[in-house]
Length: 111
Image (tube, rainbow, N blue to C red; front, side, top):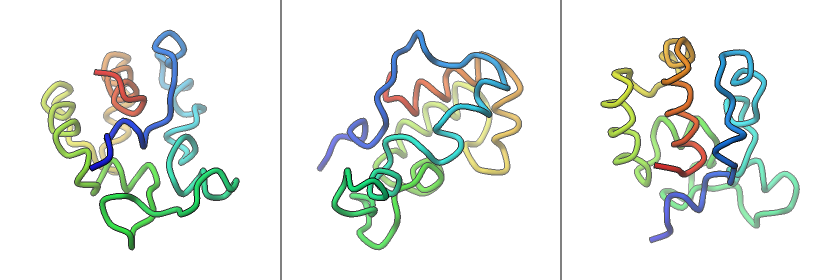
């Protein structure tokens, strides 16, 4: 089984946005980044599908809402920030800098 971190984009801890506007302007919440579907558009990946299910596109929402490869990390993050990681809860996650930072650390593959 592939490492879950291999699917996430690489980023520097110091470069993570810390306020709401930076997050809204950053790449990952907009569906860009190191996800297979995005990389496939630029011919940097052979297929746009996720390793967990060859019928599903690997995009940011798939990884955050339904991908089995990331369940343990998502559960740990949900417990830490006390918010369910789901599309309808993203505004709540973006309210506080500490929640934003923890969320982006998960997206970038850091613990």
